[in-house]
View 1 (cartoon, rainbow, N blue to C red):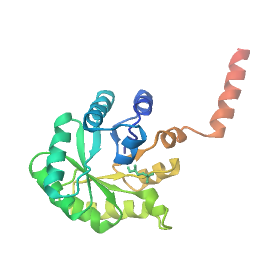
View 2 (view 1 turned 120 degrees about the vertical axis):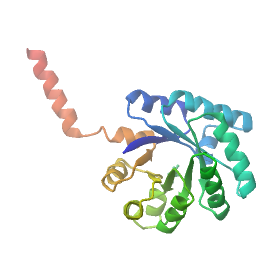
View 3 (view 1 turned 30 degrees about the horizontal axis):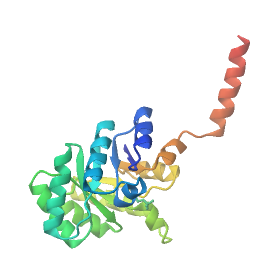
Length: 216
Ligand code: G3P
């Protein structure tokens, strides 16, 4: 399973990259706004800065909602850097646009996916990635991870090549469950990646080893 970081924060992207486990980055308008980035030029520069840090795909989301504008915006984003993946919402115009991008050699990440039916449409439209939003489904008292397993099952029996990118990850346990269920990618906030490191027996074990090493 590949690890993407779900942030537009350059320091956090660098930290995950330096750990040596980072395969890509996902952003969305909320994450970009959180970094205080304003205006087309600043947004485009920020995507280029992210691409300089990371070895792998970088999802950049369109703000448009009609076919023609999604295509124009996506072409512009894809032209910024070869690592850019155009992130498109799961709406009717988005499906049309993803098909157009697929026919024209531009890779997409279908975002805001909350059902298996939407995931089938994303695959049929030729998306490179489909992003089920696990945490937001959990917020509605359903098990978001069930959807990841269901999509994996459908994609396997149908031979769809779209990669399942588990998104809206809220905990380190989510990452483990995504791996168990066969997500191809998990996009996570930095603290959930770092949470994988933690175990009290590692800490007490290391303390004892270091105490004993000092006796030698
Ligand atoms: O990748 C999608 C993700 O950013 C959404 O996460 O925590 O806002 O539901 P969250």
